[in-house]
Length: 361
Image (tube, rainbow, N blue to C red):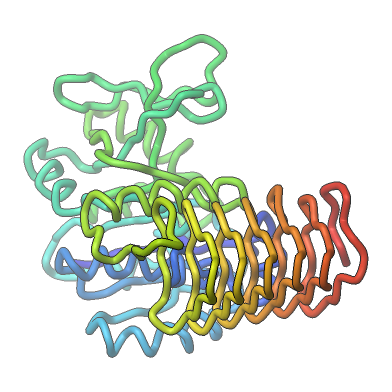
């Protein structure tokens, strides 16, 4: 089986992290976002993953070459010379996706984190016999999204309603699809949207079916959702394989600690924290609802909450970093500094407090 991951653009919403690496390589719960998806695909027997990409393909491929060997899965790139939307990339990668098997292929949006019930999706797809399956997820505020209106008993999709003013349903497209090869005949090589142009036509022919995603779902393409996504992901690990989470008197709630991270005396860590490889957390530090990436040092008695600390950064003694502060790679926050929602570009030194949310160039 094959799969296409829509990697797409520049990751502007996750800057300054994406100034250092392409967005799919930004760490989420101690491994690059895209690796969560590739591992899930490999686990159900996908043998080849095609990355649809229009930005820095060399970096992606060099990075993923290591994983190709480790996971035993073929990873290739299909590079756009112009942005092709969400359907155009399928036409561009047509020759990579088609083979003699006639099997359906997966398409995933690279920002989506979930439990990836892909095996169940294959069974669902076979059972309904239609041309395409999409995963949908229930949301509290459907008016912010495109809503999928479907027949509850069969999952057959009736129509799509973009940002509805009146309530028509609470299920939205979750960005995970399983498509028969015939769907490729419906897509032209031009900038085009699979949600707005391709799926509605398949639905009109009663060939599109939606499966409601069990478990959690989050599009982690922007900082606030990234932090929420981490909470949901760690919750899910607690239920499925709690032995992966840290335990001890200094741990509160769900915390993921890389085996090479070091934690000092008298710290309090959690809930909803990911500590990356080679991190050093000195004594008396308080961490909650945050991601601390590879090679970071948090000095004595600092406090970090609701924030993302980028690779190889330092947070000074008695510093306080909170309210969606994002430190890019190699940022150094001085002792006793306060950051209230600062977004700091890579390789900066912060010597004065940031009292309100702002970008530090």
